[in-house]
Image 1 (cartoon, rainbow, N blue to C red):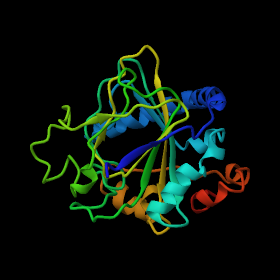
Image 2 (image 1 turned 135 degrees about the vertical axis):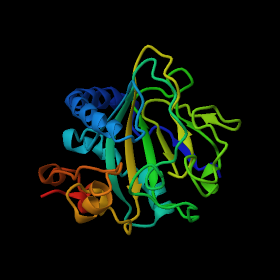
Image 3 (image 1 turned 90 degrees about the vertical axis):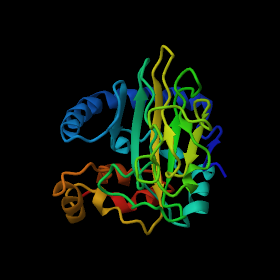
Length: 270
């Protein structure tokens, strides 16, 4: 298995424009705040996103326009087939690559990425501990900067940044890489252990996507909750780079569709 696939037409074509415009509208202020935090992170020496790439966390708190599709059988059905019953969501964000944004470096995703203070040590156990999904709001192809993957790299047992992957230039193309193509409304699903890298956006328009992460019911998420004792001990006290996610606001949770609430019941703020 390659470790990734594309689910077609998860969001109906006629709904994409409304969702995309709403996401862009609510994200403008959030991006300003994110850049302030990135400046602090860069000062600590942590490797983060590249110039021209913008990401804002906690998207579900700013708009719920995409929420009805989070339990789509193609997505939640796959998550529960791979992770077991009662899978849940821990992270919702928007990711935008401006025209001209350069290629990203090879990396694996949370909870494996070794650059995060909260991570699973390599060598990785041969078990899937999460499912990352990228929801295409605009086309993904070789012109817009579709994501690159190295098929089968989830079986290597480590990430490109750890011992055992020496000799890999994380900034260079790889001989077996493939670039993902898809249409607005399609969703890319992958094992977070798979090595991947965002492509160059050669187009004249931003490449827009939602990042949604699903996890099994048993995964300890406390280190991702700012203010928790685990977060303080593992992240704050070590001055580490974290994978964190804002809790869902109580009023937002109460107004979610009934079939979506179970995906967030564990992550509701006071």
